[in-house]
Length: 313
Image (cartoon, rainbow, N blue to C red; front, side, top):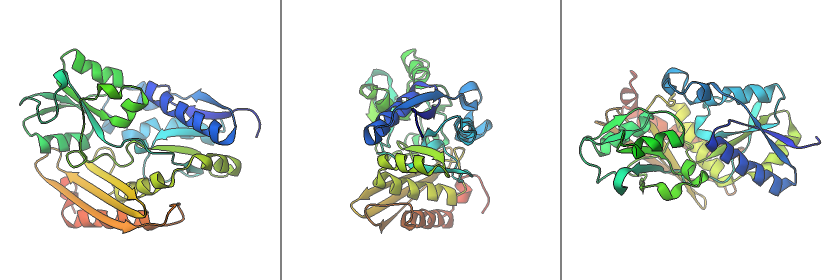
């Protein structure tokens, strides 16, 4: 393989920031030059329709995967939370780099916190997980579904259309806008989305040279956390349209997975946790993290998670 490595990316500011960070990391670790190749996805082209109606977060992924399989690019960078839980035939997640802060962020007028927002305040978010947990914490607030990039969402607060919006801390930090966060929300109040703050670096499974190259930027702790969170999501058969949250933390060899399933109106919430020991450094050959996700999903289902997700048991 000669010449620059071709990294496929969406053209949004956040996607370019994420891909740029990965490109720098790959070059630093391997000495290989990386060029960015812009790929347009359905999720970028259709910004009016709610994600839950056009196929969920996977609409940001399919065009990049098609380009990989067509050998138009050598690897791609995804926000890991955008990936469907099912494996993609012919592709592999070759690296999970260091994970950024997984928490949710409140950006509110007048520097208000979630606790200090007045009754009836309008909070913008299109994520069922965030809606359910915001209403659980503050049932007197009004959640307003919104889409669009970070600038579009934050401008709705600046213009007075909304009192606050909820975004990811990681995305704001990658855009250099962390100072605009009013409150980084405690995970005890808003449990993050599975894989929030993490990136997935994907390539063709049969491209062994690329798999080896990308392995240089692997963060084993991030891999363990993401494996546990997404295993739970898969076991619950839930996607972006279900109010499911999961947050794993690895401290040495102790992995703690917390999960929450809530009714969309916030009136009923299930929260469970499990702790296990995993080998260090963690790699995908071990099944410990995957197993704890499945176990915790079983705990939630036994407690009635199906009903809260709007399904029958």
